[in-house]
Each structure stands twice: as structure tokens, then as C-alpha cells.
Image 1 (cartoon, helix red, strand yellow):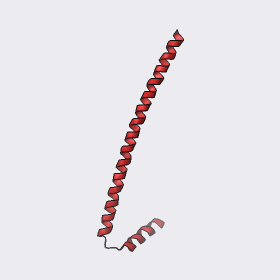
Image 2 (cartoon, rainbow, N blue to C red):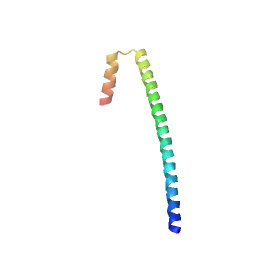
Image 3 (cartoon, rainbow, N blue to C red):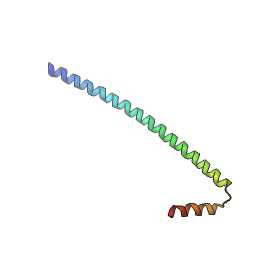
Image 4 (cartoon, one colour):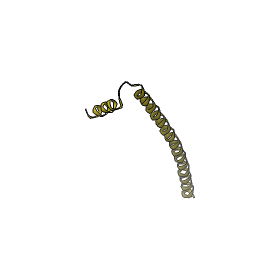
Length: 74
């Protein structure tokens, strides 16, 4: 009888731990989704800011592109 009791106790602990892990995975997935949404929003804001800077710049499109392309290769 002792063996049966121990096995049941271990099985119950395993089942409980599986539930804990499952809930943790769900929380992780939700937090990851929130992070991705925030990063996307930040990128959208940066793109808008960059576009505004280009629109108000006294430089031509060609000058801006040349600047961006040469800065990356130096």
C-alpha cells in the first residue's frame, strides 16, 4: 500500500507542476505579445518623427540619402 500512496502523491505533484508550467507559459505568451505591440508602437513613432524631420529639413532627398548611405559604410 505504501508504494501506491507514494506513486499517487508523486503523480499528483507532477500534475500540479504541469498546471503551474502551463499557466506560466500563458503569462509569458501574453507578456511577449505586449512587448511586441509596444516595440511596434515605438517603431511607428520613430518613423513618424523621422519623416517629420525629413519634411522640415532644408536638405534634398538626394542629400539625405547620400548622408545616410555614406555614414553606414564608414
